[in-house]
Amino acid sequence: MNRKFVLLILTVAVVITSNAQVIDPGKKARQAAENRANSKVDRGIDKGLDKIEEGIGGLFKKKNKKKKDEPAANDNAATENTSVPRSGTMGASSRVNKSSDFVPGTNILFQDDFVWDPVGDFPAKWNTNGSGEVVTINGMEGKWLEVKHNSIIMPEMSNALPENYTIEFDLFLQQRGSLSIPRIDFGLTPVKNILQEDLYYKEKFFVTVARYNEPDAKTVEYGLRDIIGNKNDFPLTRYVNKVLHVSMAINGTRIRIYLDGNKLIDLPRALTPAIRANFFVNNVYTVPASELGLLISNVQIAAAETDNRSALAKQLIEKGAVSTNAILFDVNKDLIKPVSFNIIGEIGEAMQQNSGLKILIIGHTDSDGDAAANKTLSEKRALAVKNYIVNKYKIAFSRIQTEGKGEVLSIASNTTAEGKAKNRRVEFIKL
Image 1 (tube, rainbow, N blue to C red):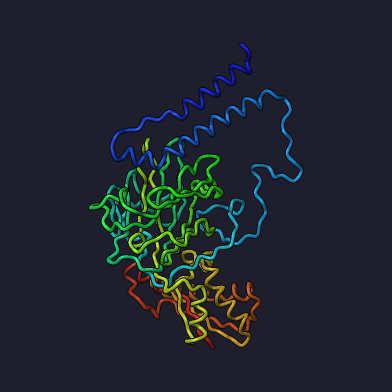
Image 2 (tube, one colour):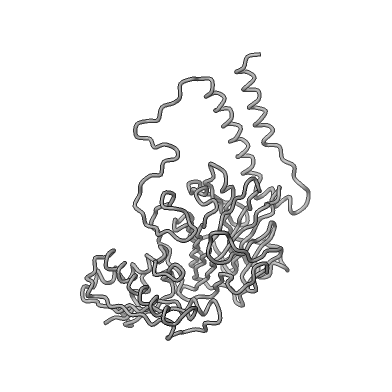
């Protein structure tokens, strides 16, 4: 039989076989079908077509030449770098370099990095309808909550979330050999107690991160109970076994979603007061079950007074002083995290517009560690903010003074994670 004909018969068989699905009955099967059916069919078709293309391509000895101006598939385009590398995050060659307009809330409502929870325990400040445990990751700082398959987690908060707030957290997108990875959902829901109500049957806003270990993985889905859209140009594969930082900005009916500082979703009329009341993360039920857990850490929820991006500078000008804990640094370092650049920029732009404005920047820390070391760290952080404003906004060095107070002027208790987060702040005073 002709080899070409045999090759085509085999590749068609691959397409048919790859689309065969066995779905269990009951609620979990309906959920699995909702979350995975479309993507599995697409993936089966894609793989079949890929094999056909490979077979056809193999019939010709001459390879296609790359166009003169076309980059190779694994080339990294050189772009302006707006990111600063963080411990455990992807390297410079694989950054996504886009500007971010995300501005963190300034009033901390919830914060947890699991530092107080023993490894092996489920963390005290969270609820779940399944199982999970605090773990560490080789080569990574801090602790992580590993959420098991078919388990939802929610932070324990006494009140519903306000109209305007932000949520930030880190996901570690792990892969180990051939073990199946989790399908990750995160979002907002009216459900407050996941042990008493079934999240599956409720209205919700969700974002899905899945298939991040597949060569063509770029699709991030989102929806309101059902999937309503997707973004298919975010390179999830660059984050395999690395940290993906997620930011969410909620302002009334509007929600914005950022991955590693890149705004992927901006829906101005998506939310109702009920939907935006509670935050959840879900290691979604799938067939087959995920063998690796969902890993999350460094969770922070903060209230924002409004969606006004110039509130910080306005308060400085009108009241003479403003303090914020939305300027973030690497742990025990004076390296500013990129998510903070916009909020520092409010001060820089105000100084550009008002040539007579002079300021004092004061750094503050929590009480962890040695008091003298904390004072030195606070001085370095204040100077880092000054240097950023001077260099980025071309402000005269003499217009900004700096000072570090360390831990001595705490504004909240240093016995809780939320209190410590409030104490780690930067203060601006008009001179």
